Image (cartoon, rainbow, N blue to C red; front, side, top):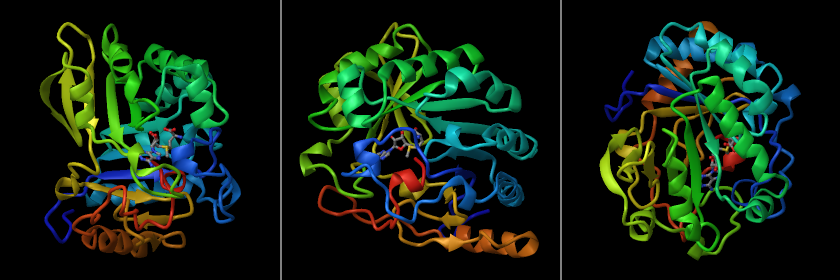
Amino acid sequence: MKDQFGREIKYLRISVTDRCNLRCRYCIGATGIRDGSSCPDSSCLPIEQMAEIAGAAAPLGVTKVRITGGEPLMRRGVTDLVRMLADIPEITDLAMTTNGILLPEMAAELKAAGLMRVNISLDTLDPEKYRSMTRLGRLEDTLAGIQAAAKAGLAPLKINTVLIGGFNDDEIPALIDLTREEPIELRFIELMPIGAPVFQPSAYIPCSIVTERDDRLIPCGESGTARLYRVPGYAGRVGLISPLSKHFCGTCDRIRLTADGRIKPCLHSAEEIDISNLHGEALTEALCAAIYGKPAAHGILDAEHHSASVRGMDRIGG
Ligand code: SAM
C-alpha cells in the first residue's frame, strides 16, 4: 500500500534479536555494553509471531523481507523463521544481513529453508583493525562466512562496508579488488550518527570519496538505494549508499520491525508503534496506520545532527 506521500511500501526489515557476537564500535557504542532495555531472546517476539506479522504485511504490498539484528544467526529458530517467510507467496525476495561468522555451519540449511541471499558486513581487510573495530571478531571467520555463502548459492552476494574516516578510507581500492574475480556487490555505506556517538565528526565521510580514491570506477546504473559502479574487466560491482550526503527518503519503501515488536516507520525517527500484542484485524489496522503515517524524511542528519531514533542500529537492524 501507499503511504501518505504516495510511496509504495514494499520492504519489511525484521530484527530477530538484539544479541550479537560482535561489539562493533560504531554500532553498539563507546563501551560495548548495551543499556538495560535490550531484549534477550526470551523477551523478543516468538518467531511464529514475526512470521504472522510478515504474513499480515504481505497482502498490504510487502514483497521483500530482510532478516537482521543484532546478529540474526544468533537467534534460535532463525532457520524456521526463514522457512515460514519463504512459505508466504507474496514474498519474492528474502534476504538477511549478517556478520557471516556463523555462516560456515548454517549457510546450507538457510538456503534449503528458502533464504535467497545475504549481505555480509565487512569493514576492513586488516585482521588487527577488524579485531579492534569489532572488539571480539576474527577477520578469518567473516571471510570464511563469505565463502560459505557463495558455496551455498546465496546469491547475489553483497558485502556491506561502512566508510569510516581514518579507519578504512585507506583501504578503498583493496576492498574494491574483492570484486575482481567474484560477482559480488561491494557496498560502501556512509556512517550514520545513530546510537551512542563514538566518533569525531571527521569519521563521517561522504561516499564521493570512493570515486575520488579509485579512478578505475565507471558508473553502471542503480539498484535500490545504491548507485552502482564497476571496474572494467572485474566480475563484480561497487555500490555507493549515501543516507547522509544524498538521502533517499523520497523513494524509501521500508518499514522495520524490532525484536520486541515495535514498528519503526522511519529508521531515524523516534516514533515506534507497539504491535507486540496485536493479531488478526487489529494487527492489519496497526500496520496500515504505520505505513500510511511514515514520515516524509528523516530530517537533517550529519556530523552535527544526530538521529532522533531512541535505539541504536544494534537494536533496529541495518
Ligand atoms: N549483525 C549483522 C551485521 O553485522 O551485518 C546485522 C545487524 S547490523 C546492525 C546491520 C548493518 O548495520 C551492518 O552492515 C552494519 O555495518 C550497519 N551499521 C551499524 N551501525 C551503523 C552506522 N552507525 N552507520 C551505518 N551503518 C551501520
